[in-house]
Image (cartoon, rainbow, N blue to C red; front, side, top):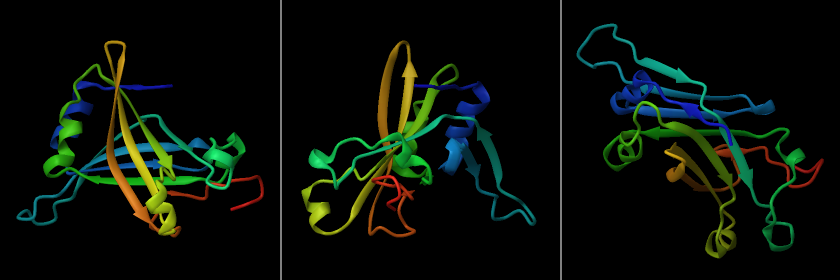
Length: 165
């Protein structure tokens, strides 16, 4: 797995930001932006963004396959994934752990379902932050989404079989 090495400026952005936007697009394009809201009492103030080339991966399970096996690589040809984390209260915790020199990556997991979610006809997608520090990895779930298979999903466009959407 590839990681992005944080600078002091990157770590400070995570501590001072209000939101994190993580995107994975077709052909593997990915981005991570930390956004700081504009002060409300300053006329014409604008929000500030800090963008990093953090690796983002997507993985999933095939609910139609026997045992819900892993998907084939061609299933990801048209996938897009988007996670938006508001850094308030407990959400800020995982990002407060970050320091200069840490290596990070983000990982979307499509259809991390259980029996209850399946019976309700819903989909459970997760976004995890992976911190690589001193030879070990820490994986923290930073956002989840349980919804119908529509535009509200974090992971969209994943094909279970070639030609099927």
